Amino acid sequence: MAVQFHLIAKPRLKKPTLVEGFPGLGLVGTIAASYLIEKLKMEPMGYITGDQFPPLAAIHNHAPLHPARMYYSEKHDLIVFVSEFVIPIGSVYELAEKIYEFALKNKVSRIISLGGIPIKGEQDEVYAIASLPQLRSILEKMPSVKLIKEGATTGVTGVLLARGAVEKYPVISLLAESHEGYMDPKAAAMVIEALNGLIGTKIDTSVLENEAKMIDEKVKSLVTKAKTVHTEYKKVQDSTSLGTMYG
Image (cartoon, rainbow, N blue to C red; front, side, top):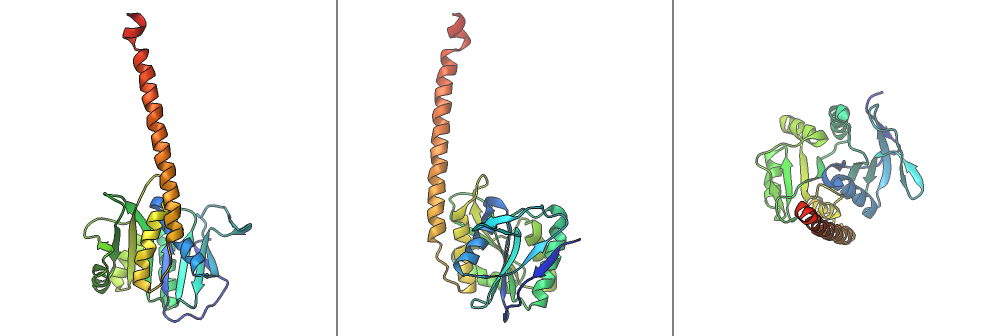
């Protein structure tokens, strides 16, 4: 059994935008996609399986769910794919192919991928990659977004971008600066704000921003404690040096 899409609903969509949020740096894609689904009150559309996907169920509100799912909103003409596990490398090409075929079959107007990129300075930038020159022109006019001129992007998004460039199909990747060591709701909020500008939604990200502050405070507290422990250890180490012990 290869990668398969299992549809449980047939919504009436016109030329929907497809947003993809898969785990990566800071879990930005998964957090942002899940937040979109919640805030826009999106409906289940189906789920995705694959022979290399991990055998697990996600539990939300007491209910077990497939960890890779599809949602839709007729009101916003929107489809969202979300995964709660990192896509196995052996499934990347096939999943990207399936998403591309699904997009063509369902008259998807564009694919937008949400993710994270390592922080270079202050955490205030959202970067973008686009498959077509006209998309890059749109992104250049957005004050909160910077286009990536040189570099590389991997995984399902990378495959979709490369194919979109060859076949003249609109694919965009939005990447918020993110921390590597833990989940980053601030980065998810940043990428959603950029998405708002692209698709015309007005999703309030204050909940994510508050979560980010709480996490930031916890991390700072842990760092402070670690420094204190290190200082105390250094004092003990100095007082029990060879010179002190043996005169």
